[in-house]
Amino acid sequence: MIAEGLNRRPQFVQVAWSSIEASAERGDFDVGMSGVEDRPALRARRAVTLPYFEFREVLAVRPEDRARVRRLADLQGRKVATLGSTMAYDLLLDAQREWGVVPVSYDDDVHPYSDLIAGRVDAVLLDHVIAERALRRTPGFVIQPEPVAIGHYVGVLAKNNAALRDSVNEILRARMRDGSLEKTFRAWSVWDDSQAKHFERVLSEAPPPGGVKDTRESGVSSITAYLPSLLRAAGVTALLSILSMAIAVSVGLGVAAGRVYGGRLVRAVLAISVEVIRGTPVLLQLFVIYYGLSGVVRLPAFAAAVIGLGLNYAAYESEIYRAALEAINRAQIEAARTLGLSEVQIFRLVRGPQALRLALAPMTNDFVALLKDSSLVSVITVVELTKQTAIYATNTGSWIVPGILCAAIYLAFSLPLSRFARRLERKWSTA
Image (cartoon, rainbow, N blue to C red; front, side, top):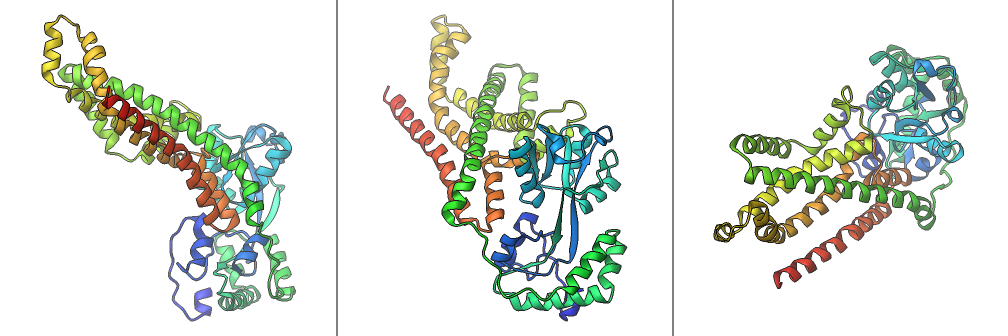
């Protein structure tokens, strides 16, 4: 409709929902319209169209909780799923402070409802359009009729594109008056009486006055507000990385020993396992462990993240240890055997210490890489440092300050580790 009114040919551009605002500002497309929520901070940063759709934030619960859970206050201490960087997520953060609700952030609008049915979360708070579509797709929950909040969808354009925004507004008003927009909403089963009342309000209001009061927080107050969340997320990243690396080292040592000392069948099975893990994306492995195996074992998100990253890096660690063990001069091993040492003694006194020196540098590199790869676990609802930074950046409309803070925290983790490894390597090389 908008393209037709502008005498243009529509061209659709696919970007992540949380990137729509930033992509519009940098000129990747002219108008972003995909459930973009109207809020004062957005109007202060960008050129925003009139609200063309009114949505309701609604709770979805399991049938047995229909009578007991009707509002957020009824979910004290319970897990509630939603999309990150949304009005619903902000509502859950307020509910967390007031009633102890536990927000669980997702990157899509499909898995919150499947996890609700599976019992991983206790409720879902999202737009009624998303909830009703999910109910048609995967029955097994109920939508509470009382809305938690009311919001509106708008189109977003670059700040300097106000002239195009005004043209789009005129087209939207015209389509509201002639019934075209209503016809489209009815065709997609998203029209109800609330939309009719919303159209009346929009058409009866005068055009908004030029300029909107800038409600953005200053740089200092913004950092002060978000720094505690970033530090908590950094703690999650550190703990996740340490536990995953512990699994990677333990399992990697066992696999390496099996490939060096095991029989032909053991070596073949371990070699195939290593190649399968190294040859498939860690993101896919996380999805399989968390969602694919949920019918067999329902792991908590953090545990699935630790196991997924740990097993993935165990494959790489095992190759490091195997290569280090096989790099030891065979003459030393034969000499140890001649002296009557057992294979365990040879490993402990001769082969192991030298192999550890060889493996130290790549082990350190792997730990730093794992620290950064931990950002992938946000796809299974773990809010680690990068995910929290993305929420911060989306809410403030800029990646500059959040990106600098995130990079500084990652460097604070990785640089001391690298220096320690280099010092230890130098010490051992002269021992």
